[in-house]
Image 1: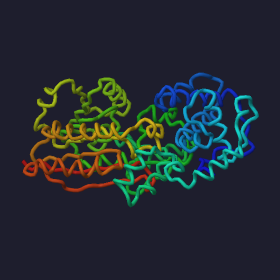
Image 2: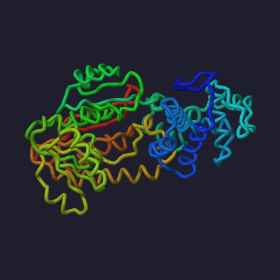
Image 3: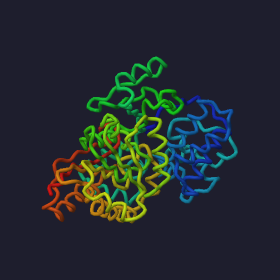
Image 4: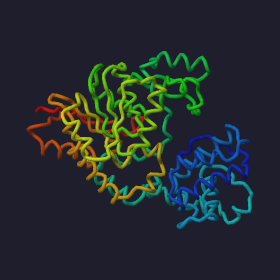
Length: 411
């Protein structure tokens, strides 16, 4: 049967309003092509009477059906989804998860025996069994022939909830004690000094410790990127693709809130969110700059002791936490993003001082977005830049997939 998350039991009771909410999520994601996290966040606000178990049912069952969409929809023999057929997909998901579907009108067209027959047949086809698009499977085998199947299986596991202790206010060991006082159990991660993993999935944003800035939500592999840059207190550091600032805030903590961090992005709304997070974290060394022209970059040429380029990428290393991305990505998009990565390297690297260090990082598994991009950049600038070391985190190791390269500017 499906590698299901184990939340449900075979005797569970379904409720029409929460199941309808799941169908609504699927409609928005697969028919309206909206992002799953935003859709689920919106749907969960619709009924204040829903308790924690109701919300968990809606969120987790929605994500699991999205994750296994290709397999489940083919078992249900649904090719072009509409609202009616989404109910059949839900029913098929119940059947192959070992759960008896509810006896509702919307599920009258479901044939459990046929669903199971399809399921057993499709187990022999890797790309269907693991629910990935044809083009992605072909690309994966081409670029990662020795480990593609292993990593795809890992990407179909549920992502862990990982906290990053804010070093400005606490340590991971101290945060673990503070959380335990509130009956929240966590465990430390070997080799990740700031990381804590929740033993039981919970809504961390409701914790007072979060509101007081003691931690952020950030995968352990992602946390390693800022450390890989080796920032030191008092330095001038530029995070040139900062987004909403998860890595920026980590840099501030690693620098003990001393020095200066310039967080840059093309989207002002992301920088506005970073400012809010920085205030909560007590990070007073961060300055934001919107990249609204090439002049912004040129004014900072030769200014950075450290430069972080966490570039746009396919996100194929984080599909376990963003499973809907499998159905939104395309080979054409990846080609475009690879050009954007080279543009960022060319345009932003001059901000680094002589002798300074730069990290190029992605949350992709593909060598064409990672090692090959760095190799191409270094080959064009042999007299200026030197590759010092590279590091990878694979989904099969338990966290997100990340690549990072440490590059030194020689002159």
